[in-house]
Amino acid sequence: MKACNNRFDSSNFIGKGGFGCVYLGRFKGQKVAVKVSRNKAEQQRTQFDDFTPKLTDFGTVAPEGEHLRCFTEGYRDPALTDGAAGTKPNDIYSLGVVILQLIMKEEKVTVPGSGASSHIMDWARSSYNSERKHAVDQKLIKKGCCRQAARAITLLGLECVSDNTRERPTIAQVLRRLGDLEGN
Image 1 (cartoon, rainbow, N blue to C red):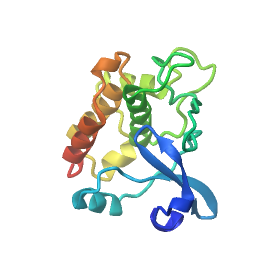
Image 2: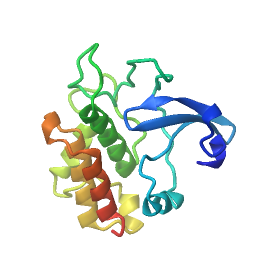
Image 3: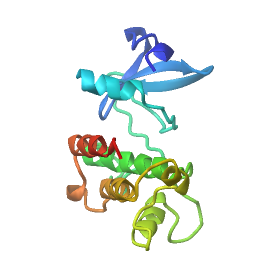
């Protein structure tokens, strides 16, 4: 990620999102937006050095000094009212959608016009409440994700998309729980 945007050079600065600065980069010939982690601890840097990225289009980032409210459907917290400023719990909702996408290996977040269960969180809840007790894709289970970790990561994703914003974990809690799961 450092190479694709010239080591987060200030000339590539686009703007600031809910959890940090966003930079313009190039990856395999395509323009991408890259966010640097706020945590500068050595442990945090080494954890991300071995991370295999999954790049997804989330929509728009506000340029520095501007306040742009634009949301990608499916990632937008339903608790966010039109015209309201986004909050950290709203960002956690979006993160929960991404977590569910990754563990379910599902690119689509919503299926327009498909009825009541048209959002990824509905699919995940259904799997979690079934006999399986998790929503992790079977390919990931076969690659070594244990069922206990599958249940824990599914629960984390579902807590992030909770209808009650007060029940959602903080970003610190999400990071701690992901760190706890790293060895599983």
